[in-house]
Length: 407
Picture 1 (cartoon, rainbow, N blue to C red):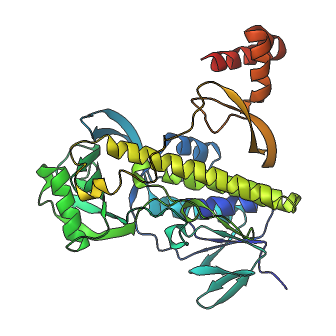
Picture 2: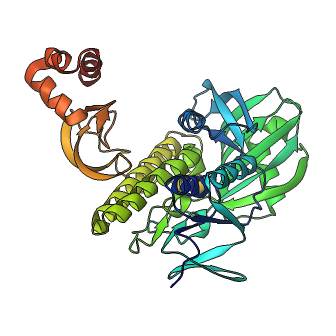
């Protein structure tokens, strides 16, 4: 059967666009299918993701990043202040799709769904031996049913000093961004079920979280999105690889969504390359994907649960009470009490490999390397000879590794 491409990517958000960019740079013929109808919205941009995108030239020519702006938190009696960058998501998505096209991917406008051997479109079919599903929450959900959650967001006009604020209230929580031009972006998370239309519910949440904004007029439509966290489903068919929220979806409270989208695209690229080089390593690829997705999604869900549990004012309210036990009662991570060496599957030179890693309290998922120095080898040498052994082997770099192990 003739193929239209080596790879089809369904969905052009950060996970899909970066997946297409990586594959095109690897020399594959890539079709990126996306309807191109993203509604503008503001989101936080983590420092790690900003550094990664910028370091690879993927922000060149993009002017949709704001800040950093001062950020305040009103939660569990905490009133801390730091700073945060923001990004206009529809603009970022379009820019990253353009980067994928510049690398050689072809953009196909439309919606699609995976089917054996390719993708079904409303007006036809595309064929490829491999499909990456980056449709976000439009993809089938995995196990571990979280309480049904709705994110409502939109613009209001109000006279506020520029900045960001996160505040808890009885019905959920509100994240808002005040811009210098008098526009304020509001996003609230609440139970999916509730009385009133989206505009009314967003206005009520705004008034509950910030009484001074009661009655502030909405500007334009309200964006409603499903926002419950999702745990991953096992990837049985390795010709269809989920990525980003299609693999595992983060609660927006974690602030980890875009970083997860891109990091999962990197993980799926490693799986794709491994399958091409070693087709018999399918089980290794499945184990790597599930372990990475489970560790990340469970860790973020547990952090969100603990953040909710820390807020005593509203724990008897339905929104809060329904979420205090999801996903379970286990600690956020199974950090070892002391450093230990463990077997793991890691990404090495762009493909998967079985290696020993060093698990620590700060890095329970394991450290493969300190720069170019194998972490497990360095730890064994440190145990046997102390800092002197690392310095003798690796010089100043070994001394820096010794300080990290000892600290």
